[in-house]
Length: 171
Image 1 (cartoon, rainbow, N blue to C red):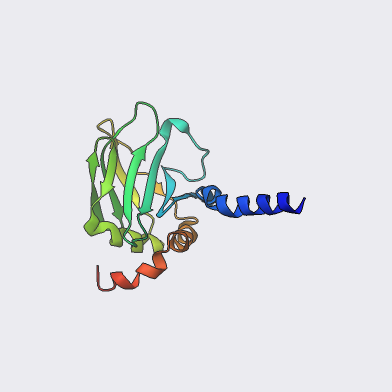
Image 2 (image 1 turned 60 degrees about the vertical axis):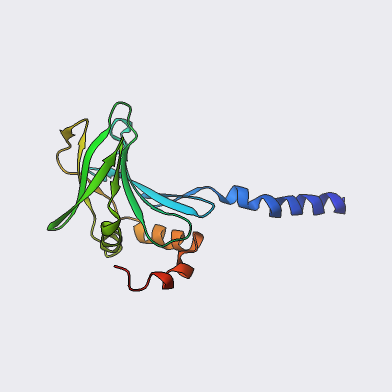
């Protein structure tokens, strides 16, 4: 009996990392993590009080790879037949363009830290995008409800805290 319990306990310890590679929800953000990559996604919607509409499933994602504290932002459509063909985000007076590759819009590395710090400071990005070459109006936005908590969780989970010192002086 004790041998069986020991084997069971050791199995749980050995395989706990497998089960840790999973997802959790923090308010409006879904956080996923696998090995050294963490990412968080939120819906891009016009009215954040409305129910989820699978025909308008546009997602905004921030990801961190290999424990490096440099973010990558993407915009993608998960709706059948709807493809992102152009995208930018707007914070108050300035607009940051994205590069669309196939059906995904990617932020430019020179803008990533600006985007991250604006969001951490509570400025919600308005998403200017075209789906199938048609403007999406009115301009939708990304909810920041839970974003700071999601970022803090990813920072610990992907060990970003330990590599932040290496990024000092980078803007």
